[in-house]
Length: 144
Image (cartoon, rainbow, N blue to C red):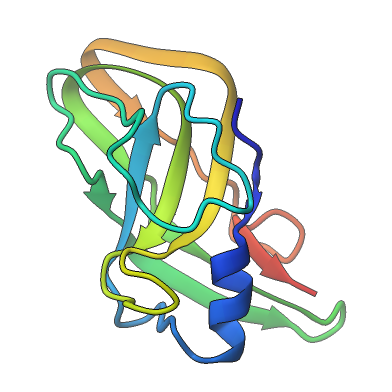
């Protein structure tokens, strides 16, 4: 079972400027029972979902939103477009956000692991991972 969290590579990478969320290519990959957690360092094909309409390495995330709530002192970012796979037959239990641009601390360094709370499937339809609203309390990635 995966854990929903920021990864250690991401935390470390922020301090040494390994990520540029505006210009890096950020991807969302789907997994099936991966066991990923905060120690998951990078994208891997091991336990990656497969099926009609899904391509290994996942989809490119688009519409990055970066903001800071100055009252509550929380910086956050999110994406305006939810990752999705149209006309797909996929089953997944979790997903990984990673940079396929960043090369340090490792190539394809992970940012975030999201546990779906069980298997989710599509059958000849659209599989969409609905990201939470981009606010200081709900955005996928928040730093307080």
